[in-house]
Image (cartoon, rainbow, N blue to C red; front, side, top):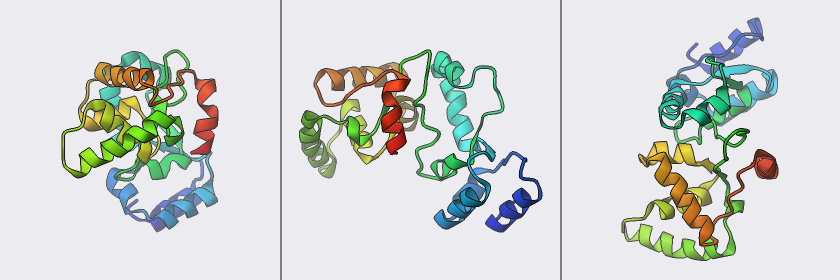
Length: 194
């Protein structure tokens, strides 16, 4: 399968199959292609995590194995809904971790930014424009304002140790810049809005 038409034809022939696409195939799909696939085949169509996201999951398994287990338990197939397809394109957010049951969640959207955090962002933007070095906390705020992010994807992308990333969240919460909701049920309204 190398094109939208091939993917569509393959799914039409066998709607129960599991899509297994590489990063290049996913990146080649347009926004319209993805919308058509999702509309025609629905969220019940399963997609194996693409190589880029599987590499992240392997990193997660070694860096924070309890969180990996909370996500996947014994399921090594790493299957998700077709609804996540756009998140796997280059520059996408990936399979965001926001529904942990046994561990604290570290999932944030722009709505998690408090008034004090919004005010602090002006200084962060000014520093970034001047190419001044930003702290981990400042980079995290910059990422949160851009859209949904979890601490593990943030740490993976920026080469930050998970422990340091979680410390940054604690500091931002303590300074009233960021709301940190750790329980899955408290995050539901934030997840549904995204």
